[in-house]
Length: 212
Length: 163
Image (cartoon, rainbow over all chains, first blue to last red):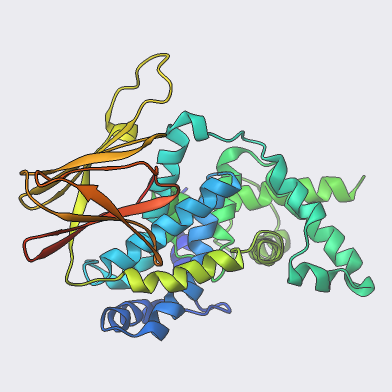
């Protein structure tokens, strides 16, 4: 168990660097610029942290309408609290935590509760086409596209805990463990081992499917 | 070097390295899959960009101090129960009741106030308030909303909330 915490710390050191629009060191500075009225800084925050907010919302399996409303509420509230946020460099954790609380509220008001296996999401995978998806539809990419859909289906069928963790981890740029912790209400120290286990479980499912 | 793999599986040195690598790689593949299959909807991103207009350093924020969804014990069998909310900014309290019929509420202590319901960066709807600070609106807010109150020389905005 002790060794399990080592990669989490190592992983934590390379948070927004992998192809990220927002370097973590910059988040605090961007927040400050936005407070001073710089709309471009605000836009950079939205570009860099939107995928995290969306991932948290999706991790909680809200239906489309609820997901859209929670996402908006989180950003409206962030704009409102701008300049009053105590640790601007942790804006990602602030957003993740706010998103989590709003999601839990939605799930609590039972009439809005959506079923665990959201058929819409699977439908979307096969029916709708995002621009990026259309690129994948070229012949050379057909096999790759198929593989990605497989992988997504296997991911969707993981247990709740793993599916939730992986959906947050796959935000782009990759979230820090602090942000994952804020997003899911789990201890930072347990994320590393859980992540290893969930990814392995997914790998096993994909391999089993490939063997069919 | 390979100590990132937990000790739960007794694998050879080679497999340990491969396994650790594959885990990173799989996560990256998932990340790419998410940007293709479940990206942030473009119109939502745009709304978030426009939300910058909601930033108002001069307004006081009235924080949510009571929300019946969270703080009240649900009544068994009761359906269509109005949502009760209380916001507070210093001395000023705003009680709000949201139902399918609309929105009503009261500013406390009772005082004259001009009140608007905000529905987003571009949506502002004035509501009727009497000189005791009681207000009603026939249109229930759909989606996120906030109330903006102008009382005396002060502007108070309630925390954004999803109706």
